[in-house]
Image (tube, rainbow, N blue to C red; front, side):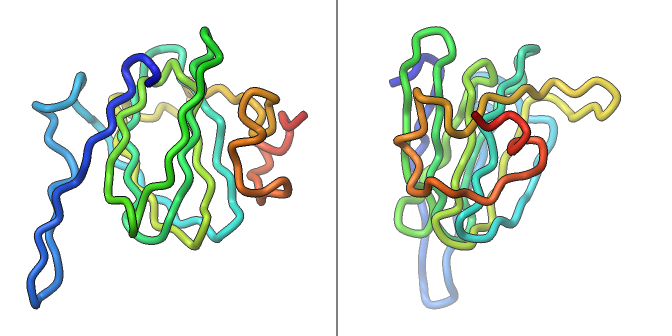
Length: 155
């Protein structure tokens, strides 16, 4: 397992009304979260790989659908991959020094809590190509839908 990465099984309580799940408890995390982001991605989208030099950590959870999370330890080259979401309810705590991203295997509603607020005047977000040779084989697609920024660094 990549150093600092935490896999947190989410306990889901279900009854005839639906279900309830505690998604985050800061006292159980290495650092408190300060901002929560929500994204919707259509099947085939890859977001990332991104990393943060000043130490922003992320807590990933797929709220609806299935997403493949890919993490790359930039120092050792070790990788981690897990499909999370409807059939695998877990959250992943990812230290920001590791490159990380996700692929929408289906349409997904994705939540990520972060330990530092985003500063548009001095963003701490850096990019490694989604198709970097260390991770290219981990995605389910070879023709992802990318943001302009992520496409610009693709090799």
